[in-house]
Length: 121
Image (cartoon, rainbow, N blue to C red; front, side, top):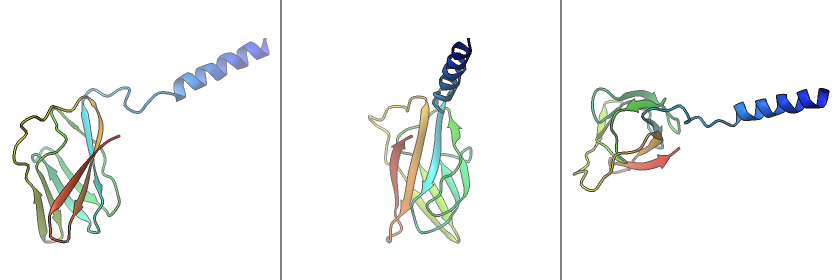
């Protein structure tokens, strides 16, 4: 009897602990990673609706939900008194991202250009 209860409890614990963090998502969730040597005081993605603040060097922001998102986007980074912009030319051929967790890994080159690496979490 003890073995049966122990087996049942073990099975229940394993079932609950094996769920993915994205099992209950209902939208696209994007966070920012700062891969530059500058602190990002403010990162605007697409519009004022999606603003990330105080993202330190080699740090991640919290996720934000998007109704519609792509592998790249308009990004405006403010660091101190400087502003850096990534302006996509067009979205022709781009498909909407499916529900999931994603990271925009951002860096600023020595020339002041914003680079974006898209990461599926």
